[in-house]
Amino acid sequence: AQSVTQPDIHITVSEGASLELRCNYSYGATPYLFWYVQSPGQGLQLLLKYFSGDTLVQGIKGFEAEFKRSQSSFNLRKPSVHWSDAAEYFCAVGARNFNKFYFGSGTKLNVKP
Amino acid sequence: EAQVTQNPRYLITVTGKKLTVTCSQNMNHEYMSWYRQDPGLGLRQIYYSMNVEVTDKGDVPEGYKVSRKEKRNFPLILESPSPNQTSLYFCASSSNPGGRRRTTLTDTQYFGPGTRLTVL
Image 1 (tube, rainbow over the protein chains, first blue to last red):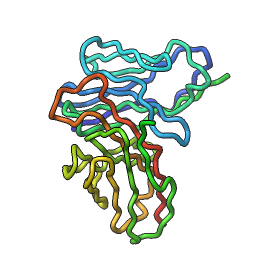
Image 2 (cartoon, helix red, strand yellow):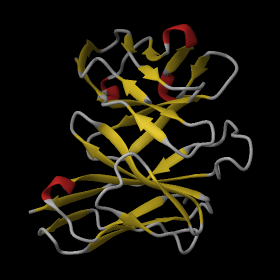
Image 3 (cartoon, each protein chain N blue to C red):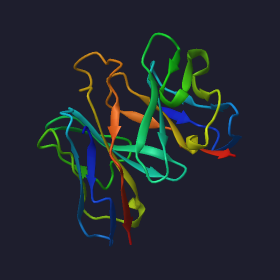
Image 4 (cartoon, rainbow over the protein chains, first blue to last red):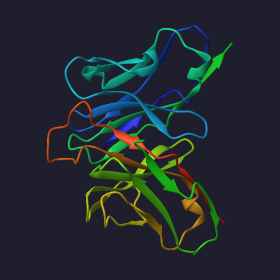
């Protein structure tokens, strides 16, 4: 069965520190992979996506993610976190024909001043 | 401005009273989808539509209906709401029609602002 696991429910980092949010997936074929961010009371905004090719993907707001097929992972990283990055982050996988999508349970990021 | 709109944004209702949450997009997208978001569960797909008059179940379709009579609209219908349908609902649309052509890097889902539904 398809599933997405985000093992960290909450993460707190200091402003300026580096960040890595973990995402593991279970999918029968090579999926499309996404990271979304949701600020309080807002909808979801796409940070980045992986379809094929280079396994290191650059996104908006200085985020990047690396697809590791052998580990079924798609971890999100940022070298230096800003206070405005405090939000909830969702990893998602999509079917190759772009019909069904599966989301992780989310990771809430707190940023300490 | 390209956007997905949902109405209402907030709704409190009672068990059994039929309701409809509307979703409209102005991007001429063929694909549209509904999700519910619950704490600790992330987003779960309810229904999706690949095109006009083409709809299919997602992971949690029980208790919901949808229709796609025109391209821009994809309403979510709760015929007899129950308290376990209290949730935050998101509509999304995408430029990828799914299955008909190769997905490109420009394909992505655009999400509406959400509808917070409470069923008493």
